[in-house]
Length: 235
Image 1 (cartoon, rainbow, N blue to C red):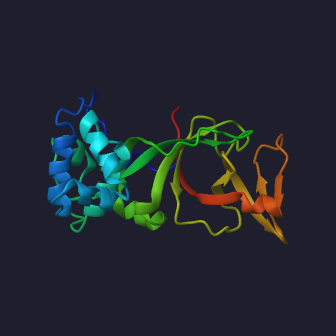
Image 2 (cartoon, helix red, strand yellow):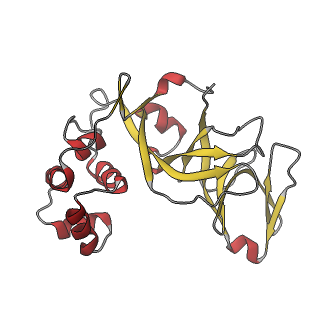
């Protein structure tokens, strides 16, 4: 695996055992979120999440809490997402780095296509991985980072099918030789990005794939999601 394999620990593992299902449901999450953020009502929770009150009401009825909500509260309050979700662990993630050297980074369902293009662009959180906080800070802005899987072979040998990429969404300014996650309409790609007069060129490391030149209206449909700052690979 490229990089320091000791930098991350899968958050849903305890030794070799999978995390047990959450037992406390919505009420437990709301109680802990209220404690962490100083909330009094579910309407205040909806406001902190940028949602309509009805979304919180529906979550309460289903007794289920989206992982994206857990992540949002975790980052706002700087508390452990496992504690928010299940109540089994406790501890603030911010302030005292000596006590909390790790920070959770969400893995989202979007797939970075190193090929013809991936339309699996849902941003739902699938899991969390913990990285050393000081290491993340050297790479960029930890609170803006997400993990995504790579699909396809257009970026081989640098990125391979099945790799997991760490994306810093705060790094959207194109710099030479950088590898970026880019969105073109509904497609998510991972490419080297090169600036040319009036155009951007998406380059593949695999020479079997031709460059993609974007200009004019095509540039309006393209967005730089963030820069790839780390890769993880299973052998």
